[in-house]
Image (spheres, rainbow, N blue to C red):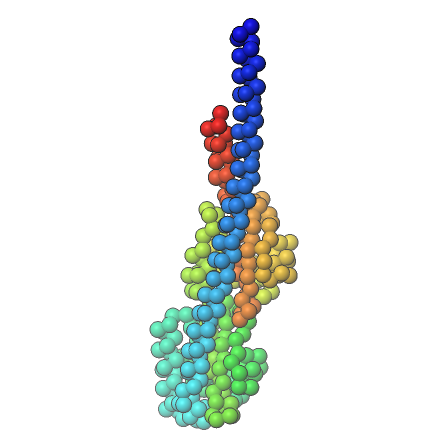
Length: 288
């Protein structure tokens, strides 16, 4: 009788403790998962925003260089026909290109768009850019930055920065610099690692992938080929949950107002929440 009485007290008590512990573990699991997801989401948004800012700061530095070249008084005389100054500026541009390492070319044109001095001697007197939108805009006296385009020379993504060469209030010509984005994107975009298998990638305003860990996708695949990619292009800034190659992921993305290109970071949800079930299990075991 005494033993039965003890069992009547002990068994319900154990079951109650187990139930309370299980409930605590479940609540802890849900709270931990939500807190971890929220914290990581904020961090991912900060990383994405700062990466876009880095891209824009770098482009801004290139515009300053281009403006300085356009502001060189020798540029006006070279456009006017000075062979000596055309040779000098060509040498200066070639030297700058070599030192910087990411300039595909620096050139000076006359008012028709004909290259009169350049880092590549083979373009001088032979190439004209008079029909290009960035040239036309620069000839109005304004700095122009092209969309991300594919270089015909290297096949890599570039942008073209064009600055007017002014003589008083008159625009005499244009200095334009082709800036290779490949090196910068590898350094800034390629260096981002999210958990174990997450990554960052960059795409142009039409969704063409410009930088990605999978080299075979670069300049060949558009994110618009995927349902989630159309969401990204429609929103431009934000976060979506999606499934890619059988894995559930969250994608945070931002668009550069300067270039129109987007940068996105994804995180695999399974990797993000992996520690949480283990923690809940430990709480349950300790409680028992």
